[in-house]
Length: 398
Image (cartoon, rainbow, N blue to C red):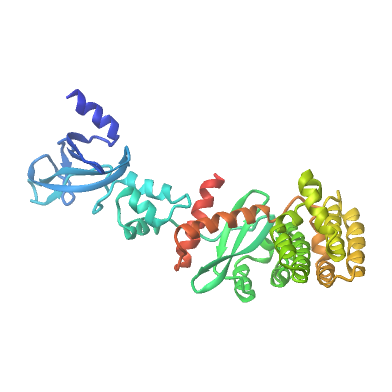
């Protein structure tokens, strides 16, 4: 009796009386029943404890000690002495018509807060994949009711719903993911933002995005009071791309030995000079002597880091203007194209020096979304993909 007392405590289900426990290598089966007590008839509300018969019901519970768990309950069916109605006894941890405990449902939903796929969670709890999906479908994430002070948007490659790119909307100031959008087309973004009135949109003071024209057009139309900020990562990337294209072009001129040297040194060439170790500096210097154009491109790349280190907008503007002139005078076509891009986006780039906001948080979220998508081998249903993402980040933001 003492053994079963502790078994009941260990199981942790209210009022459950354990009669026997059977185990094999992969599963645990618990044979149990509820205590007999009077029940009210659902028709006439007469109290009765008269038993009509018993039925066995198999109920799935949360896994324990690395094994799946099944509870076999000897379920009573009572009969009302007044109206003759037959009805089953109440089981607190088992909703009507269900074949799994409340805590198993909660356990599945909790597991899906991570990057696990539906399939891996299903294997863990000994349920079918369709059952896990049905459980998750009860989770709901409505559209955000109000817009944040800092509105950040970025796209990621979701390939769901026959659309290549989806959008993520975040509030980098509070570190919250606000919504996931099925596409990034201008028409959809316009319809999406129309759900908030002008007063709500005026609440947005900063709009953070990458260098995609449709985002800035949307910001100009819907967030007229907001300062548009170009994320630092995206305009730094323009410089890196320009330098890397110079490297690719130059390495084609030389023999196989030098081509392999340049190719295998890609990351080293991009790395900031002040972070290089002594042996890495020697390797860089040896490559600089091979090509004057590569040396000039490398110095321009390093010079731009001085722009990034500017403490305020005024100094950044002066340093950027000097850099643009140097890039245009260098005669390197890749840098001329890059400098034109910086001129076109100069206002948004310089705004990034005035405020601490960027898409760094958003890009971090995108990396986790990639893991979620990779674990599941992609999602065909956008709404389910959206809820998985929001569910994952809602847990991390609490």
